[in-house]
Length: 456
Image (cartoon, rainbow, N blue to C red; front, side, top):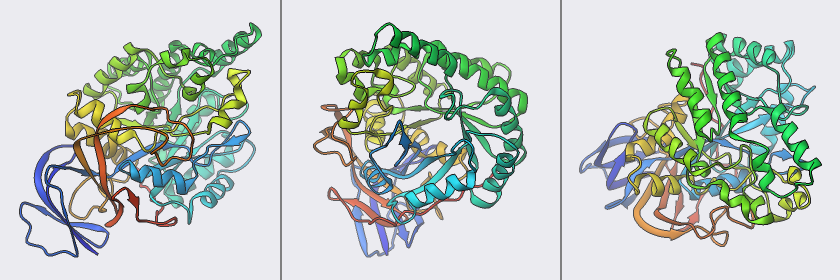
């Protein structure tokens, strides 16, 4: 099918301009003013913003956690992503300790193949590093198109690896052109604080926050940057939340080190005061937890300073019934919140419309940097001739209110209930096909394709 988008305010990470876009098949064929092409479908984008489809490089779909599973699977999660302008996600495969990376890959392929509506890729979480794992890491990069490897500095006994294993993994990954990503919090300190609070009878959700103070993230972030510096490996800190952790990255730049940093939309717009609502605070129990207003200010500044490169979601939703597992004990509340559908609109409303960031910076944070850092650019993450026709058309002035009554994520509450947003995603295209139009999804389960990524 051919599609002509006319008169849009087109934005990439480096520029914005008025233009038409002509799409044929799955790719962008032409960009320019008053294009002479005739198309089977014409979309008038006058007064609208036209940006690359979003890439959310941090989601957890159908993920096993604390005896249950995150409530969005690949079908419902990627459909919700499309409604919010995100055309591709990167999920996390979790290696089971004592088992192989390939067995974990097969489990996640069963979850995703034939179910995803949007495009997707995987990070591989390495939770048991040994000689066999080291060999499989190389195979993942060279054969499977999986080039990023997630590590945890917390969750001892389930996901955490020690610093010695981390360094060995970095050495292998560097040699073969991959990247190590990290959940950077000091797990030993957090476990001790959780135990202290439980022993004292402190069981409310606010103690989840109080058991993970800023220092636990700042210390681990600094330690991770030191290991990256020693090994020369490319690295990426996921869901960075606070000023202390950002300062660890800032310190690393003084030795001319580059550390890639992701924050998540919730840390830019929500804060820890939400934990003061008795058990309702469980809606925002995630790790790391929401922080203080001063941390929001630090993150917005870090974006402008180029220290924060990507805004993701860490989308890991649970139903309110699932959250009740921790009714009597904060440490048993499933960690995570629903956000995959709201990232682009919240970032546009709070960032662009409030003058915190430019429109090109919005594109950089929501799509282009993820595509570049994870080996998919310029196939993904840009409006350019030859690129996949993944496009989001947004009305920059349309106001609407976020609510569980209208969202498409498979959970019965919203972490942003009643939040008024200026900027509404109206039309979304994935590889030249209309995915979202007139408040409906026009693609079916199985349309989404796995995107193999290149070593760098």
